[in-house]
Image (cartoon, rainbow, N blue to C red; front, side, top):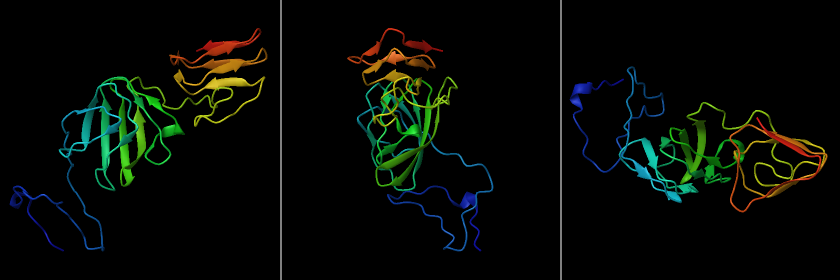
Length: 202
């Protein structure tokens, strides 16, 4: 076992990694608290580019995010969103809770793990409001699953997981629907209720 005094390490000025290894016979133990660095704010972009100056970042802007560039396999990052944008689920590139897109809000925080090069899994998402990311009511809208597939039959008790309906839907007269607000309908999308159908925002 080797011991290196903390006051002996003043700085490391190299372009590579500073690797701490137990040579396969154990882990690297930190017996005091570990402070990670907050990097500079990064602007939202379709393909989000992370800084190399930390593991925690504020994301500014409202541009839809569909992927995140590589930071190195095994990286763990935390993003705090400063506004509303669409965080887009992808089956391999950007895996989000519930397999569905998330509309962010100021103060929302996401923790992500890079499990393969430029492939990220969101391991935790906390809404600033304290509400759950996935509605425990279960189910998707009639005719729509979280991944956009087909589900449900006429006469179902319909429950919406999405805060924003992004595909047009028609409820038959025997259908009864509800969702937890706030609820919005995306531009160009229609929600048609036939005579006798009910839909409540709770």
